[in-house]
Image (cartoon, rainbow, N blue to C red; front, side, top):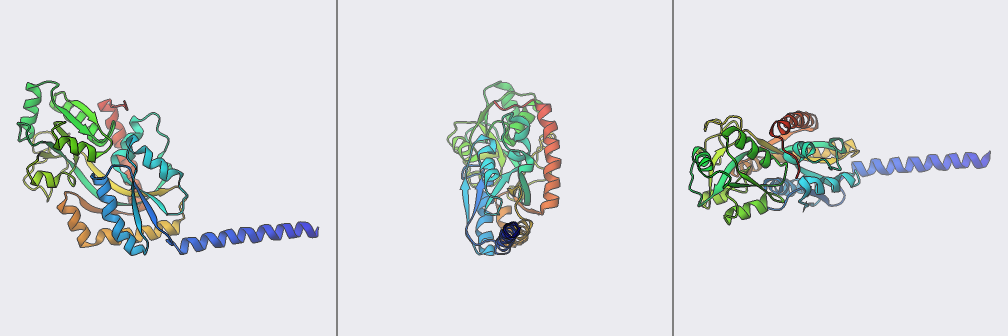
Length: 325
């Protein structure tokens, strides 16, 4: 009897110690460096979002936030790293909407699910732009479509991967303009941009930040913005609706997720500090100058946005018939 009581007391003390340790870890968070996993190569908007957030967030939290680029697999490599990480707030995912709400519909072998993560906060939003190599003999979307019709099958376009938002947008344009182009998938926007600059591909669709410097230097030409309104960074560039193709409309978001089971006090602390960072006029100015917009949404609103986009893009994938190759 005494031995049983001692065992029960020991178990209770152990449970209490674990609970106390966990509570302390949550209230003491963070007490070491945080890793922000980015599902794309350096040079794209997802990488930009991670780096724009990491420095000021690290300063606010008093710890270093390290950006870790893990491109490939339509975002699956990065997502699986974060999914399998300890749910303690020290491994986060800077996610791109195309990977999060489109890839699940086109990749039959995907090993992660929506509920493997908890939404923390959205950070940036950005429409896509249609960009062509500098020496392509077109200057407007109408001229691009005319060129494609005069040269069927000759044009090729780059994307950040099969089933990516760029891929879907390319198929949208093909279907609505009744043209044919060859799709060339890459492991992220950065490599695609390099081949576009080298005239290895003819055009691409992507969020503006990585392209703006090259457009301003006249190494690339921008034909249209796929959002509802023009961009402050490219005020003279018409929208696809203005150019006669309102159905070509694609806006990306870039937000932070944590592994399922991350303690609520940790999530709350991240949300509080991320909201402060995105509300800083310097952050908003930097985003606007590069063709994006600071766009904070907390867990509830961001989670609803994810659910709505997931359903909408599922319908679009069915219409376009895109599948992972």
